[in-house]
Length: 536
Image 1 (cartoon, rainbow, N blue to C red):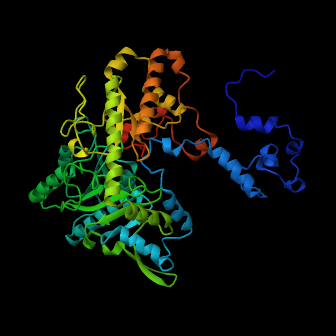
Image 2 (tube, helix red, strand yellow):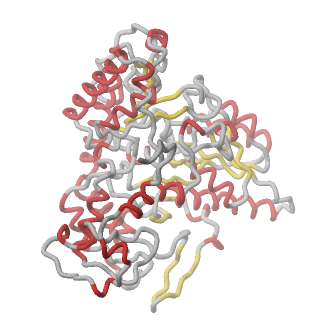
Image 3 (cartoon, rainbow, N blue to C red):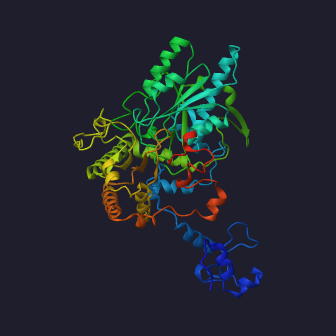
């Protein structure tokens, strides 16, 4: 009888204990029957494991591979219940059909697919810009253009160009810091606070800009709490700085999520944020977020051609045609571009407006329900009357607004945490247990700390996409209440079973990432050292 093991390697168990004679004899696959009635009557159902880490010598029947991979993928979460992600998980049947029909089209083959390229151009009307694979690429392009404009101006003045810096808040998504690191720009990551609504602090911007600042990244929709950063206020600060110093510092607006919400909702952004402000030189957005397209498309536009340095634009002579290109990628899928155009034509302005207003209305209802329980308080504030940003215990919920214009502007994001009273009465309940128990019900709702400087507060966050209908909000509220009551009745030992599971061998091999419990002790760059990856 085996002793009590402290660790078990499942792969080794399967390899050692498999009872099939042919498996143990390692006979050539050529000697085994390949015919089968169903995938589960083939040898791959029991005798032979599909190869994990090496390309096999011989292939396997298509129906078998399809079925077994499908079975393994069933272990994934349900995309519609992935409430952690901003990325769209639903498109209409007609849009999906267009995508399937055009999966083989390559955006780099402009001459070969002129109709597709015309649709790409129509999506941006007459703007100077391009489709990208997502907002990360778009942010890098916008940042690179700012850096090159700064370099050209400094070189013309005979000044040093070796110390560029860029401003962003610690709530920024990792793509912004990636730009700085990859393109050798000092990232001045400014701390956020409750007073700044966990977003870029305008006063700190004023204290950290200088003649080497190539620009300021301002986010229209923080991935943490959904707050819009004060673009107009920061623009005014930069205007005043230019008057005093003569140095003109541009703004790039990262509107990855907000770019498809603010223009369509009654609330707008609550302030000027786009090219209406002369200080804003470029804007990016994600078509695969609230643009309502599947993952794989972003957009960047510039105010005009003068803000896109000429030597960054490549003239390509390829496959008999000539085109201008300003992207980090060459080959990239065209199906998402076609799907974006479909949405713009099919939904129109009013269609997008109805979807975004519905999402905000459902997010407000969810927020009010959470706070009414007394167990939770919301860090996000789109459910509060316009101008009212603070949570006050016992305060009556505001329900009289007719549209989003009557409430604080922001993304349809609900960021919430256990209330102080709950923590006092149930100190043994860890907030992560709520996330884990919701996962058992197939909801994916992350629990993670606020940005550095405020990271002692952990939040649960729900992104209310178009598919989170009123009926689903009702179900989600019911399940959260049931789970919370279960935790209140549980003791410390009961809760120990609901901790994060050990990552798979593939996960450990493919990434050096850490579980939440180890983020401070074992991380190469702990959270307080800069931006960490927010869920987006």
